Length: 287
Image: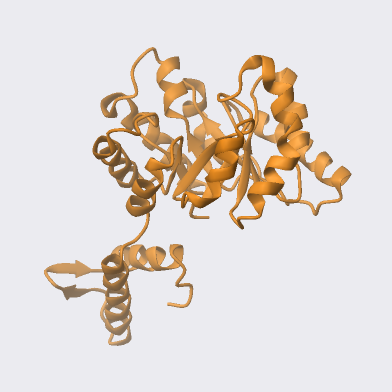
């Protein structure tokens, strides 16, 4: 599941709901958490049905970010289980048991709503030191987990530091490694998600994220979408190079060679498999 850009949409913002589908993001997240004032949590949940139905007309995957507060979590989860919703973002996950508890609530809500089992997938958000240390168990906690997210702003706050590259690179990559070890992609950044005026600085953070193994990120402003799509995507030149690598290596294998030199580099199995994965990630399944 390649989601390069996941645009947050406050559930109570009519203006954002109206404009979000046209911003070019790969997926949209109706937010019930940080963008909603504590006094309006119930109001936001009440609008979820109409807001998700409107956004779903775009054909994009629609996600919902619920609240971590136990008083709000279960009613949020139940309200988010709808035909037009694809997945749920679970904030501040620290243990595998928390994911399994949420999955059980979702399963009951699916049954009550007449939806097929497994209709809703889950994205645990790892945003605390304990969550990072348990990232492997969280990533493999349940079959509904299709993507794992690193929440940089909350993690930085919990560490009493700032979300700089120096401070965030190690924990971010720990999450990315744990996710990949369990066969799912990771989304997130090793730096602030809040920068949308200095897109050059934001781009440096996104490029570092890709180098660390992330495949996409959430974003809070439409200006960030193009940067994410370009950096986490694949250019025509990258795809063409990957095709050449695959063709040359297959030819080498057919002639009994385990590696082949190409344009000053050696192509062997890891290089071939990386090229193959790139092509498959971006829609070329028959290669």
